[in-house]
Length: 280
Ligand SMILES: [Zn+2]
Ligand SMILES: [Zn+2]
Image (cartoon, rainbow, N blue to C red; front, side):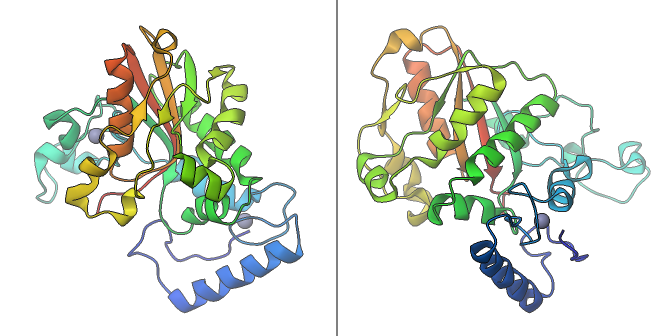
């Protein structure tokens, strides 16, 4: 159970950094000593996440309205702002919670994918789940990410389930270094729990690209362009494809993948991503 009462949901609102660092270090130590420890708070837990942390970070109170296309958080009008009586704010950015929800970026320049569902923001402390899965070889976290993502899919408004799922593929060198593709590790249990087919090789990464995070923002589109290939277009043509990944940052990788699938005739693309990096 995480007893921290400070707001920890977003970078920049994270207070008492020293206390938090000590707590995380202690949690990391506990995880190594106790196999049944919560991945976030280190407390005793039969599951990868204790009920307290799950309620705090994935319960109904943690849900935020998001753009249906790219999953970035949307500003929500308070009742007084919605009626025009509240303090000044850019009125065009204030949407009632029930509106058809697209962000200004997607309205101005729609990406190649049609829908994105995420389970969480990629921010402290939830980024730890992905970092442990990806770089800490804690593969037991993949089914947890898949379950939380399935819950997000089932709770999101107006979601049409895809006909089949595929993971964002890793390049051969990255796969050899890591030994597994974390997106595929999430996609397997997710496909099972949603009753969907999974095609691990539906899309291939035809050349190794530098990690997008290591490339300057103005070079990221160039870095990812032409990275993907579809070996069997018959599996894709006319179908609604679900693309699974662990983290969505700028969205360029998912956009390139969706554009590639659509060039091969895909009818619709829904991204199913565990965590979304909030815009700066
Ligand atoms: Zn916990
Ligand atoms: Zn958007």
